[in-house]
Length: 255
Image 1 (cartoon, one colour):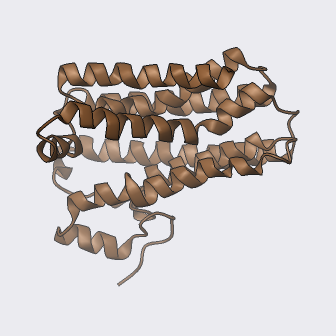
Image 2 (cartoon, rainbow, N blue to C red):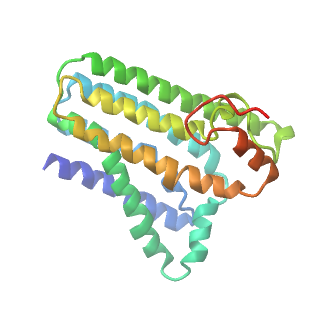
């Protein structure tokens, strides 16, 4: 029953964001809520659950990530027109747009949020043992992924803040190692959280579906492909694409 309450609260959060987005005609608010969705479900599970040290650690890490991502996206998106992806959906579904939007986008994102965040919810409700090697290994992996995402976003923000860079591509710093350091970092940190969930729990390997889903999602579905489609055909993009790894960081190709 505790799991039911967790996901009813999460669903209410997505429904509330839908209502606001519908009123403001700005459905990219769901992107801002994405990170906070994990915080909502994780905190609800923590309140209802065992409040173990490992579960609390996972909640703190997810809250740190979720709040940072929410603030980052809010600063970038709130004062801008609705994201091009959602404007395209309005044109694609002119009839019954709001209903289709809720059923196809909001409920889908609710389901993905619930699946990806399940190790956090499960650990807090089912409990966890004391810290062990998996705890510290997972924390190290999480810190690497979080740092990669934060640094990549900061480098891009500074680049865009310079008026001389208007219309140019960011190709320096971490962006010279991968075309999507923020997505790579996000995937890595969820692998770290999964490792932490294994602390003293040999029977929880099955929770691996969480990092697998987020990795496949950002790499092949809603992250990398949708963003790269925006720049397809630009000569500078094609050159950058030739030299730079799409996802996993590596030194740029020469020549």
